[in-house]
Length: 347
Image (cartoon, rainbow, N blue to C red; front, side, top):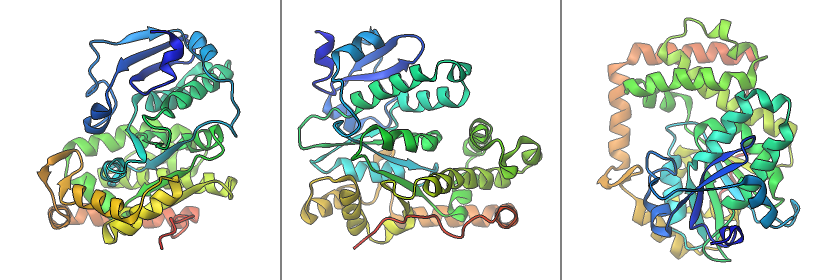
C-alpha cells in the first residue's frame, strides 16, 4: 500500500500524530469498528497491527488545498458527563453521517498545544500536523457522508482551529446545566478525582482569569472543583463566541435534546449539513432510545437517569448545595452570563 492510498478511505485511522517527531501511527479499522468502539483510543482500538509513516511524506502525498476547498470536519465539543456519546451514537445512525467518537490524536494534539514548550519555538509544525490530522479525519466511506468528530472534553480550546481549517465546518458546544453536572460527578469517586485532574490540566488555558488561578482554587471541595471546571468549559466557549461572533457554532443543553430528541437531531443535521429526512431521524432516535450510551446492550431510560440523579442529590445534598452556592458567588464576581450564547435553532 502506498501513502497516497491512505487519503482514499478511513480504513487506516491515525491513532497518533507527532508534530515535532515526523511520525504518524495508523491502525486498521472497519466501518463496524468505528461504529461499535466506545472511543477511538488505545483502550479500545486494537493496536496489534499498527504501522508508521513519515508526517512530511504523508503530507506531500495529500492534496495541497485551501480552507475553502477542504472537506469539513464538524465537531461536538462538550463538558464531560453531558450526553455527548449518546448524541454521537444517534447521529451515527444516519446514513449521511460518519461519526468519530473521541479520536485520541485530537485529544493528544490539544494537550500538546496547551503544554509542549516547542509551541513557543516551532508552532508552525503544530499547525502543519493539525492540518494533516483534520484532512485525515475528513475522509468518509461515501462521498455524500459528512465527517463529525466528538473530541474529548479537554478539546474545547481547539474550536477555532477546527472551524478555521475548512470554511464549511460547524461546531456544537454541548453541556448540561451546572446542577446536573455536579450530580453526575458527586455520585462517583472516580469522577471526583477526574474533575480535579482535568481542572489542573485545563486551567493553563485561562491562566490570567482570576476565577481559575491556582491560588484561588486551592482548598476547593470536590463540588466546588466540579463547578469550577464547568465554568471553565463555559468560559472557553463564551470567550470564543465573543471574539468570533459570526463563527459557525451553536450551544445546546442536553435537557433540550431529551425533551424533543427528533426535532433536536433534525436541527443538528441542519447545522452539520447531513442529508437526512425526518423518517430516518426518527428511526435513529428509536434505535438509541432507552439504551446506555457507553453500553448500548444495557437498558437505561430517562426515568433511570432521573432516579440516579435524585439519588445523588439525596445522598450528597449539603455538598451539592455548597457547590452551587460557590458557583453563584463565582459567577457574580466575574459577571458570568446567565446563559450560554448561540443556542441551537430548533424548529
